[in-house]
Image 1 (cartoon, rainbow, N blue to C red):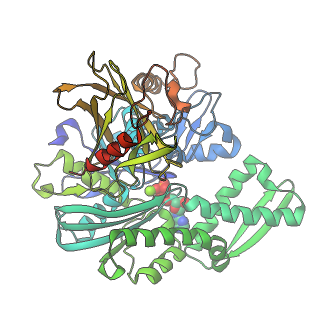
Image 2 (image 1 turned 90 degrees about the vertical axis):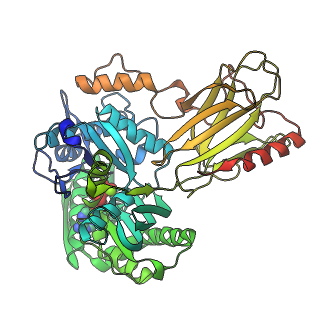
Image 3 (image 1 turned 180 degrees about the vertical axis):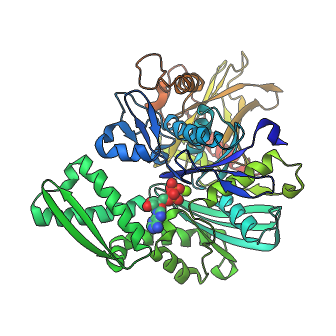
Length: 563
Ligand code: ADP
Ligand code: MG
């Protein structure tokens, strides 16, 4: 049992708010409020002169010292750095997220036995680098990350167990098909999933990591600012402090519009004062286009799942922004279903993560026996190759999007020269057939090939996409019984040395001192197509005859398999 080593917690590391929950010994999940007594903690980090402050005071500080505050960092997970340097230093997003995690855990330690084990949630639509960065944020915070779990899956667990359409052991007495619509502060996620007995299966998922409540805020901000400009001839949008204040006002107005039909907004700047009345109808027409974007995604997910709305048994609303009346009405119109809003929209995900953490640490507990979760990958995973005839880039998909996980993709390459010592493969996610708009994940380098290997030796690279959506790569030399060492040099995430250095800095609380912090890997700025002169390309990324290329193509496709 986990209790000897402290409890395992579930953490919803959100774009705007984060929540920590844990399951008590009766199996019930609870939100653990922060030191200020609040259930949800703003995911904002303020670098004050001598300390780092996370949460509401950090959001407040943004009003006066926006340049020292990091917010909405989740949107940049998977990138090398958070948008703007703070105090002269560029921070990787995972470091900033680690500081949010530390605050949640330090506060929770006031109420729980000390713990290190946690499950952290990610949007189902998060790609591999964003998942990896989330896991690294957990390590940086000193946590043992038991697993990362998709937010809709966590929500389904929470609703199901607490609403009783799942048994207390998380099993469904009859098959359920759930639609989880999650509109948070900065991300949107929609997932169709099936629960049959103890099996959780994601049917399809899609989303937008750049769409959330803050986009609704922005529409209101623009409306107020334009009116202000029209009335007084000055535009408050040029003043960062004024904008932070206006943002607060707008958020309050938006929340009030979920309960009332009309609100009045007051805003003063540059010696002028303005009162502005906004009706729900006006708000809805200002933001209708944003809602339509979620509707298109919703329809796409239904189509890809091969289901119809009347096969869907439940509609779960997750994310604070689903409190807006327009969201509920649109969903009802589209699906004919009555939304289940029985759990607090902003806490359900953390509760599900806590249930999942209990499930992982207490699998001997009769209550949790047998539940299994099956996810799909949300983006095509492939390699980038150069077509020898045309010299054009093309993408070779190894694990297509929405494949059940875990999945394995195998890809054979041939060496080009006698005695070639290494092989380099560019791994990408998403994008189109030419590889455009793809996210470069990294460069796999198969190094130390055995000496004297003849040209055209086969090197088999396998991509293993784990159940939680993380990628591991392996390499073998088929028919020789020999193996090769493989490393993945990630395009953006932190390498081991950088992780250790940042972890020390976080522990010592020395984040703004100049000194010994290691910058991310020098490759960070490179695209997937570039190469180091010390590494050699391989067919199909190197020159090969057309026939060879065609053969390889067949080879690649013939070997794609899902476990
Ligand atoms: P995330 O998981 O992305 O951090 P949350 O699920 O906590 O986000 O949702 C935060 C968003 O929900 C914010 O944009 C917030 O303004 C919005 N929100 C919260 N309560 C309401 C409400 N009553 N009406 C409208 N929007 C709300
Ligand atoms: Mg959320």
